[in-house]
Image 1 (tube, rainbow, N blue to C red):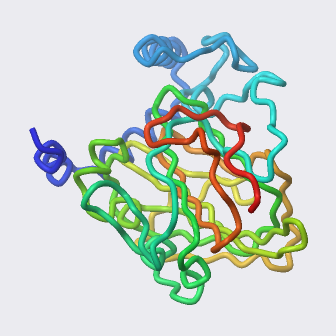
Image 2 (image 1 turned 120 degrees about the vertical axis):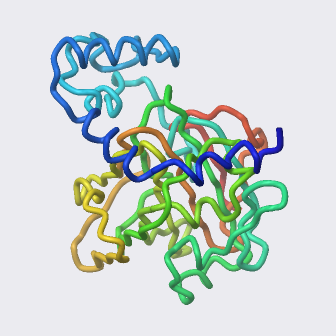
Length: 285
């Protein structure tokens, strides 16, 4: 079966209604029912609870608390590298941005302008730069951390579809990551005397009830259908490398954009390779 045929049902099902329902279930405090759901999830996806700060399944009041669980101290040591991996998961794609085009999968590309919500001047900063698209599966740790230190400048909520973001869907839905609902975070940073800005985007998906950041809390819901912008230039929100910046309430994807000539990716990285938060993502050029 072709990938496009495999994703055809996603065009037909009520993805938004399913996502709203999943969010209600995930946030419900239902006692033994909640515990049972979590136990089945842990067994189904082989979730490693030994590394969780709270390994007892029955201690989680709702599924969201379990899904966004913290890890034990030292479970993800931070590598001595200029840029570190921000999440646990798998590499979808990474590499050079070709002018303004990001590679999604064979036969599919999308523009940096589409990803960031239509801001042409912001997108132009990443012409011929670098990108990394990282997929978080249901079994993964779902907090997102900073790849390098940065000061928050802006956050943009971009409404969109709610397709799945798994590898089959990435191969079958054109422009997937610039088509789905997303939260675009713009940071400024400095490395070896070079000032630069980078984008870290949280991409929503079917069943992803909400996305949250540490400075704002839940960004969605509400889902208004309109682009929403928050400016933080004077707010003093500064995050260190490895510090948590946000989380998914159910799994999804992170897309990062960096300017031209800034970094070289870890030579051990390859599409579909498993990754862990804190491992070297790159060194500076």
